[in-house]
Amino acid sequence: MDSILNTVGSFVGVGKSAAVEKENSRLKAENERIRKDIENTVRSEVEKQTRILVREKQNAETERDRALAQNRSLAIEKDKTIRMLKGALKASKDLLNVFADILYKASEVFKAAIDAIISFGTEQYKSVFAPSEASDIKSVMQEYGKTTEQRKAIGAWLCDYAEHLQPFDEIKHRYTLNEVGDVAEGKYDWKIERGQGGIRL
Image 1 (cartoon, one colour):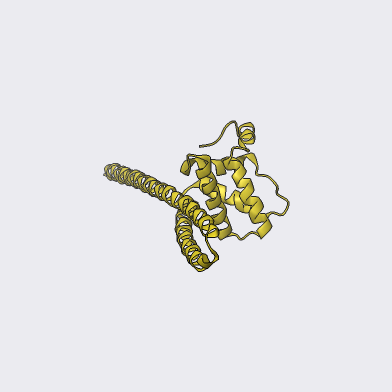
Image 2 (cartoon, rainbow, N blue to C red):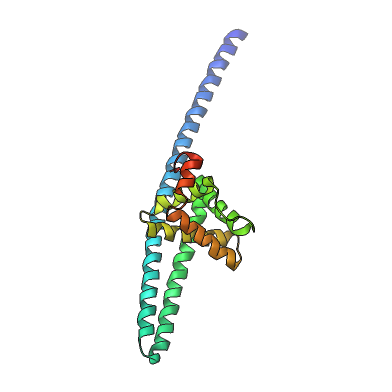
């Protein structure tokens, strides 16, 4: 009798275990689907906001050049326009920081790229990116930008977000932005290929 009860109990336990495993598999699949949905939504929004930033920057430069060519009496109007454009840029930057917060938590490559920029911007004697760091930065740029100009805009966004997390001094800010720009322009490609056998996507 005891052996029959043990056998029945064993079958019930196996059934519960199988149900738990099935539920775990379902939850993992659901989590993966949600993670991909979030990444796709964020990618789309980052592309959109980057295009806005590039466009606003071009508009600001065009407006500045037009205003400078005008009579001095237009100085007040120019200042108003610049303030308005700065406000629009700040709003876009704040929105991009929200997307960056999401990506920093959801994407290992994005987090690695930001951490590399923070390390570069805060370490006094660091003068170049390691091949693996450049590879992570390049991967993020390629994910959200198709042209060199777009990748440079993505690089500026990455630097802004890195400084949002960990402020740099002014000299390091300029130097870091230039070095990230070099990654966007392909000046690190040979180091990446030599150090890792190709760009990691």
